[in-house]
Amino acid sequence: MGVEERRQQLIGVALDLFSRRSPDEVSIDEIATAAGISRPLVYHYFPGKLSLYEAALKRASEDLASRFAEPREGPLGARLLRVMSRYFDFVDEHGPGFSALMRGGPAVGSSTTNALIDSVRQAAYDQMLSHLGVTEASPRLELVVRSWISLAESTALLWLDGRRVPRAELELQLVHDFAALAAVGAAHDADMAELLRTMAKDEPADGPFAELVGRLVALGY
Amino acid sequence: MGVEERRQQLIGVALDLFSRRSPDEVSIDEIATAAGISRPLVYHYFPGKLSLYEAALKRASEDLASRFAEPREGPLGARLLRVMSRYFDFVDEHGPGFSALMRGGPAVGSSTTNALIDSVRQAAYDQMLSHLGVTEASPRLELVVRSWISLAESTALLWLDGRRVPRAELELQLVHDFAALAAVGAAHDADMAELLRTMAKDEPADGPFAELVGRLVALGY
Image 1 (tube, rainbow over the protein chains, first blue to last red):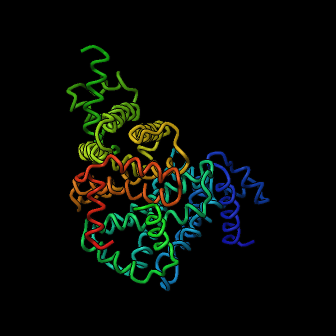
Image 2: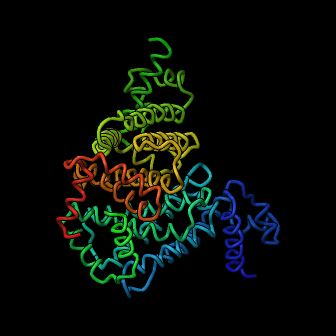
Image 3: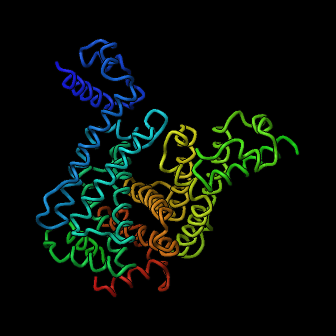
């Protein structure tokens, strides 16, 4: 194998291990064994566990960011639902590593890892604005979108802790949460009200936004 | 001064400095100067900056947790609004230190600091359940309450970053967000629907929950 090929293979093996258990439980020896090479050879490619962890995390964060990409076609609610489904796929695939990373701690809280987390949040934010057809967000819209992204994170972390609510329900709930937070934003801000009107205009009667309204009406609200 | 009295004074001085700037920018020399004692004397009471930081953070976290305490009297919406006002008081008083802590990083992300953050989140969660009159939360209710607490954190952090929306509006918005997330929960879960009905029953026409509904109706929803 060439140098770059070997590095990429090691990153893949490490990411798999770092995903399935808390990263501080994974040793270089274990990574070497899983990759079928010697421990000194691992150190030949990566100076230490942290640099290998950061490389694995970089790959994972690019993967996660890509899951927010979605063609700008069709109604918004259905698009968000597809994005949430891919988001939970990712969370499912990387569960223990995702939890350890997002809960922070000495083993995973370096400035590099924080910068990678921020880059994923920024990519998700940019994608959301683009789906909303907005280039310059008002402070209120920025708040709605960024706080919804943090809501998606905390919902995913709570789901991983026992998986007591089926993930498909949570994917739909998060789309509904976005609509609900946007509606609260609209109740506070004229620009948000205008945006919500545009969002609602193209929603079909069987889309997730209409479904939320239908469920609330059925409850008597 | 007695030993305990001196320790408490140092914690107060350190907390003040750690609140006003990012903790990694605050030196032991500076704390000693602000306390009017020598650097070696600081080390006599605390073995290092981290232990002093953790002691200051412990005091701040007890302070923050106490702000969620609120008599179980009167309508829920008004209670939550008072809690949010005290929460933003805290965030305002400790802005830079709060940001640095919640954004994590090597200087502040020890397992002790993470445990303190978790203890505040748990105190807020317990208070919320108690306000809702619930002793055993369903998985869905737990999700709604815990994810709303994370929403309050991210909203406060975004507010600190430029303060582009008046805090009083955000305090009210967060109370509205809770109602909105509870409504979405109710659309997904019969127990949540029952709880929302109980919440709404005692709300006065001039309370924050009724105000949200009024604003949304005025927008044509």
